[in-house]
Amino acid sequence: MMDELDLLKKDWQSREKDLPKLSYDELYKMIWKKSSSIVKWIFLISVLEFVFWAAINLINYSKESRELEKEWHIQDLSTALTVINYAVLIYFIFRFYQNYKQITITDSSRKLMKSILKVKRTVTQYVWFNIGIFCVSLIMLLYGSLTYGEESAKIMEAAASAGNETLFWVMLIGLCVIIIGIILLLIWLFYRLLYGILLNRLRLNYAELKKLEF
Amino acid sequence: MNKDLEHKFVSELENNQNIVHKVCSLYTNDRDSHKDLFQEITIQLWKAYPKFRGDSKFSTWMYRVALNTAITLYRKSKKRVNTQDYESVIFKIKAEEYDETEEQQLKLMYKAVKQLGDIDKALVFLYLEDKDYSEISETLGISEVNARVKMNRIKNKLRNILNP
Image (cartoon, rainbow over all chains, first blue to last red; front, top):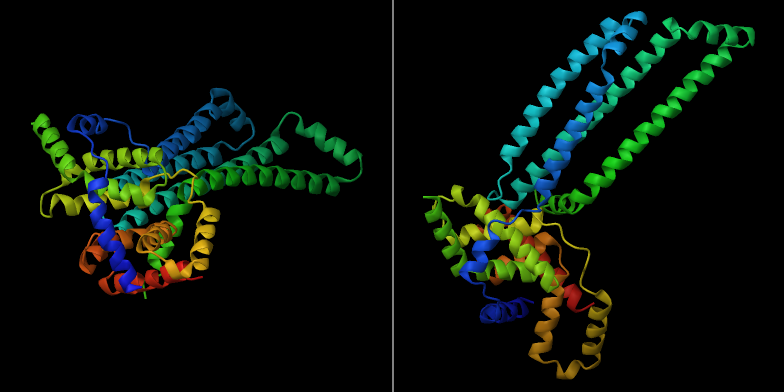
């Protein structure tokens, strides 16, 4: 095998003259084109994600919802949640920036892959945090509307008159779990697809290099 | 100042473009992908150039950026080496075992190398370029011992591909 590889080496080096040759002008034009690298896509996506979740937060939060929260007695809880949310958001902005700074193409391949995968990990954490906040808010709103909402008294009455209050609650909670489950599944699927496609090869390559660590 | 930098970079790239072409020929299978990858490596080189301090040779630095781009940053198209073709070639050679020419052998070797994974390809590439194990280990971020171990495994892999 050694001989065959050396044969290949000789041939490889003799092929140098057959390689294409680009002119100075052609190369000059090339340096101003836009990159389409994975890192760029990951950043575009994570920035979009960031904007998306932030927008949802803002849209959700109008004056009316503030009134409603007061009415439903969940104002304190909601405020606490918002504060936590923004504190964590700022933390993530900092982390995204840090990760971005750490990616240098001139590092060794292993180090470079490691930093890119770290970006993915940060994004994943960010997504799970958002999903968590989403679930907590949903449960909070549900609780508020059922306990203090205008319609809730009627609903409760109907449930009581039907004579089966326990069944009502079981069904309600079951329905909520199913809805939250479906939403989570969709979000999870979406991210798996998105980052799975982008990073699958990289993950394999990194595993390949990592295997060598004894 | 900026114009100087541009001029210096493009001139050096022009003189050393072979390195990039060679990486592209190893990591892509058709002309369009070759062009794409060449373009991407050029952009990455230019982006990293202000940080290039000249403590290593321009060519050494180029190897690293070019390989890192091919391995980690480049989004390959789905086109792969046609294994069917490849297998039929092997079969033919086996049948005519006695007049195996050097050229045919080389052809098979190239095809075998193309079938390797991204990392293995990088090792073979640096080996073909006559780089020593210290440079290989530095470029990939593994120890020299590991680079040797890996190279031996690749030789075995190639042997298996060539003599199934």
